[in-house]
Every structure is written in structure tokens, then in C-alpha cells.
Length: 456
Image 1 (tube, rainbow, N blue to C red):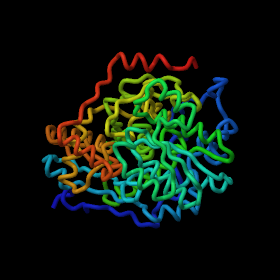
Image 2 (image 1 turned 180 degrees about the vertical axis):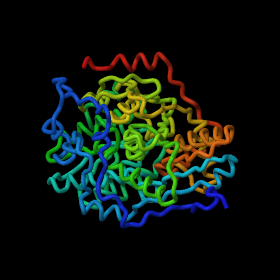
Image 3 (image 1 turned 30 degrees about the vertical axis):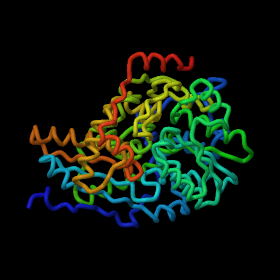
Image 4 (image 1 turned 90 degrees about the vertical axis):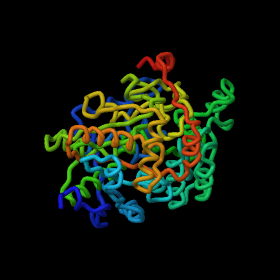
């Protein structure tokens, strides 16, 4: 038998090999992300500036250049409930594609949040709890992050308000029910309970919302309440730091079957799942020990990497957050109401943006009809319904596997299946009925969005 036929369908990492440290990719990047700027003074921010929003531990992690940061024992105990997550060999997908490539996927959907988001929700809520914070606010796009924070807030006994992008709240009412099951309060965004929400609704009463708007509302709500802090599920450096456990586990699991990826793929919205998956593989590339291609896949309706500019911009629509240098479409951009709600963000993580600008990773954008087609094929072959966000990575993996068929190359392709699509059945029904439309992103939209960039 060839190696192609002897690798297990699922590779389980022994619990004792759970990562004990987060890996900070910034420590090894040839060019670190540019410093954040204060929204009022336009000067670089320090830990004390960030502590108006985040507790000290998270503010320090955000700006840290330390290579490894120990995972608190309390957080490790909660991780043990659902980690390590399995690495799967996609034998049936390979067979359907008739490809010589070996395709693996790291599956993060085996927890109630249905995604990788719990990996950062637990430590963020933990650090807030030990700092004496009494309540939390957050935003959510597709609902996975809101669910994850609700679960973690329940673990540590903290009240939580979740500002959920309105079109996602309408598309996924069951997500709202799950979040409320854990005791959190869901607010469709934009809302009438914040100044930023009211301003947007006065200009566009039918606004479906965006992650940038929801972030503004959650930030405003936190800053206006006593002893309340805000937690964010993507984009920021400390979020990618927490998600690095995904890539660390994947590398260990591949070593167990004597494999190393030629190609590593992840979907890209704000950058959290992608950044966490690729971190150790980028490290190996930078050290000259490997040469994996790393591919970020984003929706063509919100193409921050492939159509945006690398510039300083606000992370939120109301200009409350610090200004970050990133690939952006402009903080005033409101994406079309595509079904991949978790990828509807105007900018990209400063870490991912810097890697892309330095040509250390690749990026491509895809229309949602092709994405759903790939998700359907994966569901039919691998018996697992992927989230629309994750299906972007699946599409790129399929395309690369088809190229291997054309060239005869036996490449190893690894992608992150960041979550399941069991709350996205309405989206799949919409696609199957022929009602899913590929939203167009025009030059006019780009110009309009970039007109809002700050003079930083």
C-alpha cells in the first residue's frame, strides 16, 4: 500500500500534548505591524491607553513581542473540555476530485459555539474576571463569537450584552436562541440603544449592519457603563495569539503521520482563524525550515486584502477604536448582506495585513455561489456541513487539488475548517433555490470607502 492509503481518517492528538503556551508570531515577523494610533491624538498607543477598553493582561498581550506566553492553568482546564480538536484526512473529497493530492482539514466545530471562537473567548473572559470586571459587551457577525463569549461568560459568571449584526440576527434566529441559553442578551445592530447606532439608523433605517458598526456599539456601551469591558473576537493581535493553539496542534498532528503541508489555507474576514492556523507554519517558513504556500480566502463582496489598501484606518464605524495600519476598504464601508456574516468586515488583522504586504502569504477572493458549491460538495463527500465562512477555505483547497490532478503533483494541502454550518441552513436553502446572488464590489464602492480614511 502507498502512503496515500495508510494514513488514518482522523488524527487525534493525545490530551497531554495540548499546547501549554500561546505562540506570538509577532516575535518572529521580519516587520512587525505598525503601532496603533490613538483616535484623538493620532499618537502611538501604549498599554495604559488600551486599558480604557481592555484589562491589563490583554492590553499587554496586544502589544507584546514575547515569543511564548503561558496559558493560564484555569484556561487550560476549560480547553480540556473540547481540545485538542481532530485533524481529518479528506479521503472521500480526494476520491470525488480524483486528485493525487492529500487533503487534510483541522476541524474546530466540535463545541457548542460551532467554531474556533471559544479558543479566545475563554481566556478573554478569564482575564476580565480576575481583574474584577463586573460585566462585558461584545459584537458578533455570524454568531459564533457571540455564542463563544456567552459560553465563557457563563463559565465565569459575568453578564454579557452581544451586539449582533442585524442581517445575521435575521438570517440566523437560532443563533440568538443559543446565545440567550447561556444567559447573554442579544441586541441586533445597528440599534437604538447607542448614539452610534441611532446615528446610522437615522441615515439608513433599513441598514443591515456590519461588524464595524456592531464593534462601535459594543465599545460605546462598555465605555458608558461602570466596571464594564469590551471583548473582541477577531482582528486584534491578542486574539490571533490565543488562536495559535490551532496551528500548534495541527503541526503536531501532521508530524504524527509524517506529513508537512505544501499549502496551508484559511478563510479570512478579520483574520483570527487564519492567523491562528498559519502562525507556526509562517514561523517555519521564516526560519528557512519549510516553504509552505499560505493562502487567505475572502469573499469577493468584502475583499479587503485583494482590493483594499494598506493604510491606517479605524477598526470601527464610529471611530472609537484605536487606528490600525491594515488592509482596509474604509471604515465607512457596509458590505452586502452575504451569508458569510463572519467575513463581513472592512479591514484585516494588522498581523495578517503585514504578512500579506511582505508577500509572506497569498490572498484570493471568491463569490458566494462558488463558495456554496464547494461547501455542498464537501458536505456530500465528507458528511459534514461547513459554515459558509469555512467553505471559502474549502473552495481554495478544491481548486488547488484540481491543479494537482492536472500536473500530477502529490501535494499535501491542509485547510482550517473553522466551524460547522448547522445554523446556516437558511443560507444553504437560499443557494439551492437559486436565490443566492453574487454581490458586486465596484471601483465606486472602493473609492467611497477609502474617502473615509483618517489623515494619519
